[in-house]
Image (cartoon, rainbow, N blue to C red; front, side, top):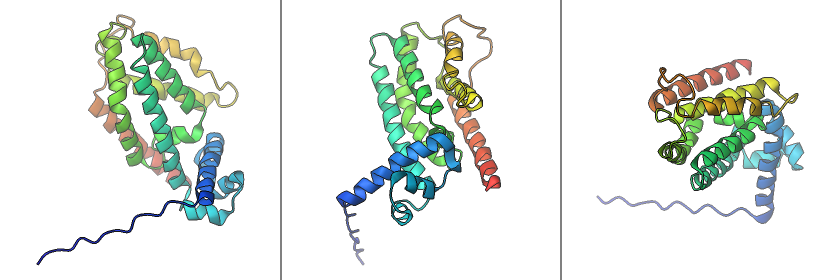
Length: 227
């Protein structure tokens, strides 16, 4: 017996007004999540976007679906920044500018920070980090080849550097939103050859990923317990 492949109907493109509403909801979610993180509700986002609550729920079943749409846009931007930084004439300056751009993005946007930390969906955050692995590795290896970065550094060092400075942003909040910039030069100095004691090896990339997944799972559990 031969099997017959059932053709799935192609999804219809959104009408212009529906597409506008969807983009308005995403833009509003960026603003609301940036201020309040995932404490915000889809109803609040609909109000900010100037659309009805029913319209919001026709596009997104819940605020986490909206978060996924935001993350896709953000990751496209970050990957593009990493690729552009890898083409910089000065490898060290390219790495520094990339880190500054990522930190500016994450420290100024609480919601995006929660998304990338996997507060509500570790698996999706991990998949997003997969997209960054190649471009960031190329960026780091280029700076190592030029002698600007210590040879034992790896991408887990960059990940921890970003997380440490995001914690500064979490604690300092709106009082001193740019305080992370005070500590960035100190951490960058640690990436330089001979800048610090190199007797402690970096965490391997695999162990870093496993540790991050475990941390994110704990964050999800804590968030669910508050609901």
